[in-house]
Image (cartoon, rainbow over all chains, first blue to last red; front, side, top):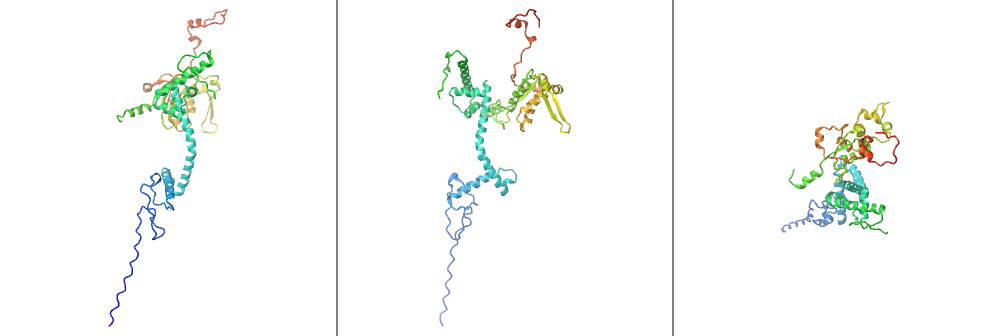
Length: 200
Length: 178
């Protein structure tokens, strides 16, 4: 009798499935099964050490950071809104867009507002020393002390004695201006007696 | 409170002060202008609208304010009760007789910035018709604000020596004693 046929060879084992990507990886659900996964981004992250959130689906390495930055900015903004604007997408989108537009416009108005605030503070400080703001500023400029209003306001708050000496300088220059206009043309004695004539 | 010396300086810088202003023979508009600056805190270099750095102001002798020109007869204070036919107009004299502090109060109220802070700042304003002040307010007073208008002397307030010393352009034929 013929020997029994040899048992059929076992079917080849199926190819091993690709290893599942880590949960925080942007390619959590791979588009092309079996294709090689791209290497994960650097641990520190590129611009500004940004952590790319999992819901971003990038096409390229560079745009994933841009998208993440935009979404992060939107998120940080809308979290501080009042009412349903901080929870519901349709309302939040409108509010965030308006917030961005307003912040763009406000950048120009901030400069005006801050300058007005500095002027108010300098006026308060110079009135404490007996000088009005226009007299103070014009006489400082005539004495070639070209400090801007921001610095003068900071001096008025944090360096009161320096501000007092500046006010005294402006007052003295003012008196000399009056003497030059009303006096008899003789050069008075003193430290600040030399009136600088600007020829522009 | 910590023992940090800078916290003491912070408390001292932002402390609320009490100022006195004598309104005798002063125009109420200038009184209000000087008051509003102190109430808002614009006399301080640390001023900011959100800082709440204003001070208290106590105004005395509001009964003796002095309007210039014919304003006592001509200036009109209008109001409406809200009901039909409720439009009321009173001259400054009538209002002053009815309430001696009303003119200064309205002047300050209308000069303050028209925002929600206005009512809070009005609560820091204290008006008295004469120079009688309650004790607890008098204890708080720190400094007097200089009067905005220099009060001129009347002829009968001059002494005879000052009148004699005053230079004369011509001597009258008949001497009239004042």
